[in-house]
Length: 130
Image (cartoon, one colour):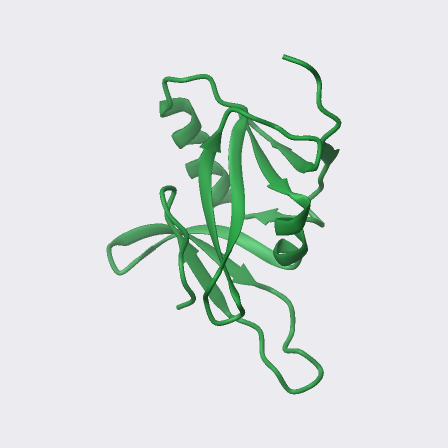
């Protein structure tokens, strides 16, 4: 495989809580195939116009950002990263339904609009705002 020129990300780009990091690390260790990391993606929908999802990936592209975590990588393409800034990924058990939750930490828009407070997702599919 050839080396890519993925952009190194920091916790200023994407924030993961300790429970989210622990669960992602656990999931990556359970995968039997060779993967490069967990890809976070955005899809149209949700209260802020986007919902987020995650999937395992065996590919890192030149237009990807890469957040190196303990035991795994989080991979985000630059288009998705525009929507991820100010979002914290958490893992929570909400009423017996454990899932990844995307919390928008940005304040409400200055024009009176509001930002989505929380978006949830599972490893297999995108989620909507709760």
